[in-house]
Image 1 (cartoon, rainbow, N blue to C red):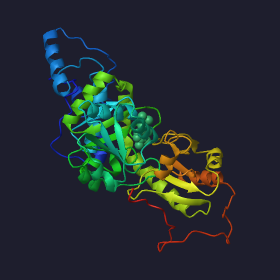
Image 2 (cartoon, protein in one colour):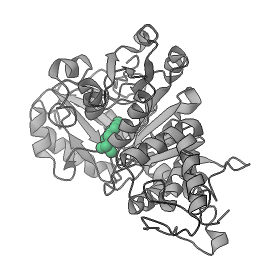
Image 3 (tube, helix red, strand yellow):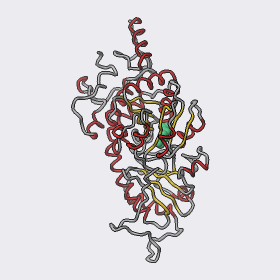
Image 4 (cartoon, rainbow, N blue to C red):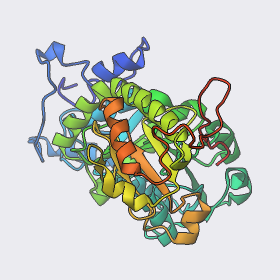
Length: 415
Ligand SMILES: *Cc1c(COP(=O)(O)O)cnc(C)c1O
């Protein structure tokens, strides 16, 4: 086998390594042997071959099961060595056999839906809330799928002979509602469960350990981690990965090699970034919960760097009032972002569906970055405005204190 092929380093290692170690080394195991330190970026769209009989056989093999062709790469839409490094690394972190990268999170979800629909399994069972565009893709039936929206308890009853997928997010975008993935995987029976793990990242949760067959990421968010690369990825078993590669080859939603490089670099710091931002987010969640200007705070049990909160006042004024925090959609970057889901990320979801999913018009979603917690709090405090402000006032009503001296934070459980 050619040492520079995409296969040289994608076999499972015998000794399991800790997540922090994998984050830095996975997908790079062959570099030192090649006399390299940073991974090479292969920008080739095509690759020379003097053996067209051999190429015919490799293309037939790919058409059969979607396994990456052995040997040198063939064409950029089939696979790219730099992107393959990222796929290898993400599969290691999620504990799956394989991973398949796409041009965006939505391209990744589209490929999953097409892979199922192409076998006649067009029906999808899904739990709200989902990321707004995922909700829209299913609701609009753009890819020929038909969706049944259910509460987690209704999944089993909603399954039909043509159900090809159960789709959930936990913690969910934007409410941070958490689901019992193990119970849901059990209810799915033989129908593949896709868990969108964008918010948790493999640092906080590995859905395959709870029985999910497919793990989806908008790699645009935490995996890239710096707000400068759009990408999506599905981590799964090799059988499903083969079908996803075939769909990717046929429909063309490939990831650019430079993006693959940036994602691999992002993964190296993923555990450090997620843990640091989560500590800050937890502290901000407590402070917001103690603030009389804030009606409700959502922060997941498993932690994370996302905080959602509902204000008593006008949420648009909070967005207009931030100075250090950036008022922008997206999440998972090194800097803190805040947005109003009802106006932006979930605008495309019809209002009754949005409200039914717990996305209130007063909800703000904040992606906490790596800034100092006091600077962030100063900014939020100013942006929350003077309405009902309690600062410096001993008579202002405060929320009930728990025994530990901490105010209660709403931790949505069931849905
Ligand atoms: C952003 C997001 C997506 C879509 O990903 P893109 O990279 O923007 O296409 C899917 N799921 C979740 C949970 C997201 O936050």
